[in-house]
Image (cartoon, rainbow, N blue to C red; front, side, top):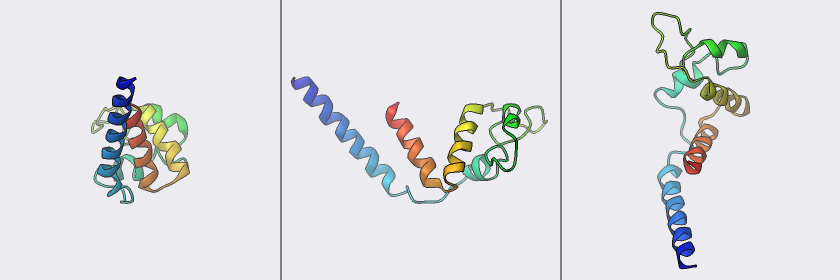
Length: 105
C-alpha cells in the first residue's frame, strides 16, 4: 500500500512540475521552425495541398526528391499537424497535444 502512495505522490509532483514549466509559455505564438513546419507548410493546410501530397514530402513540405529537400520523412506527424490545424490555427492547441503526448510517454 505504501508503494502506491509513493508512486502517486511522485506522479503528482511530476505533473505539477511539468505544468509549472509549460504554463508560462502556453499562450505564446509559434516560434522558430514552427513557422516552417506548420504555418508555411503547404501539406498542413488542407486548402493548399491534397492529402496524397504529404506522402511524397519531407517535414517542411518540400518534395522528397528535390535537391534541397531535408529528406526527413514524417508523414504521421504531418497528418497530426494537419488535423490540429483544422481545429485551430493557433499554437496553444499544438502545445497542449505535445505536452499531453510527452506526459503519456
